[in-house]
Image 1: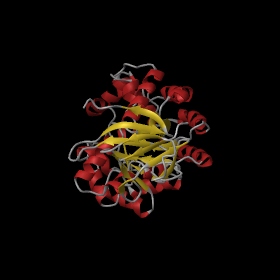
Image 2: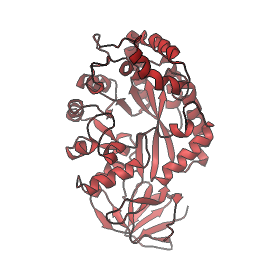
Image 3: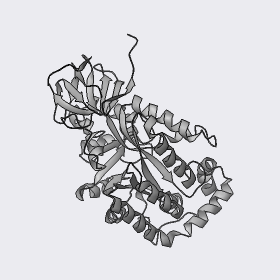
Image 4: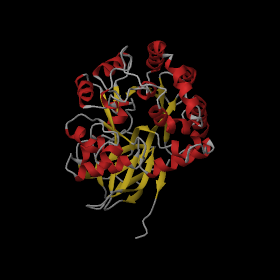
Length: 404
């Protein structure tokens, strides 16, 4: 593998931003301000060099699989396009938030199996490291065999506990962000025969390719499984712990919810829905994830805590792309422009911190011995940054030259 030196850039290091030369050999960062020693030189004057990003949760790939409701694209073609998007946005490691749910269609176990198998088959052709976050709907017992298969695969996945079934049947008098612990015996449930509930379920039914009435009937059947769900959570958590897989819980609304999933091994709180549960996660030493689109836009589209406020308060460790890959870079740029933090610290939210939370200790920083996952940015003062080059293990994954 070719050795090269990137010279002239402002480099985002773990503790500062400095103009240093970065030498890459054998896919690893070999030295800072070392000798050229016959290596190819990349002139990066006027550019910013940063660790390539690590995305702990991204589901924008779903729009490649289903660009319109009910319109499915062949899985391999969709994932190849997703891979190109990741590289062009400076994301060298991506955990695709692959929903394994009881509804048919896009978020079904069958589609999940296709994606897991396709990523394995495509691995030699992909430019970035594509992993999966097994975003398991806890009422979907049929997903457990696929979870076991994926946990034994070549790239260890993460396991995320989701419960959109209980969220879906929440009584409308209770705000989603304030709903009780999902397994509370007195959980307030909507009248599933009401027209308002049918209207609420219509988008999910359309995504699943089902008539609304049939979808609600299926949801009623799934709701009958509720007494068995805690045992299934225990089983899945034990499997993930046995493999050393990182675990997350999604949309926590109560400290009790966070405590429950922590006891099952989930030490990452993903998109906590209010300040109380966020502070409970921090007090317990859990990692906290918010959506980068939240930070890039200046607020949550669901009314959850503002990511920028959480970063400023020290209550956010990681920013995830969520539903929009460009948001990670855009979020860091906006937070920096708004004076929320220094660039070196803010960049940890999209690189070093997610890598650490996921157990990927070989990447996420520009330091000797780390994997040469790098992104070279065109970032003029006062303007949005854009990715010009992305390297994965020292390999050129993406390159674009401005017309200028």
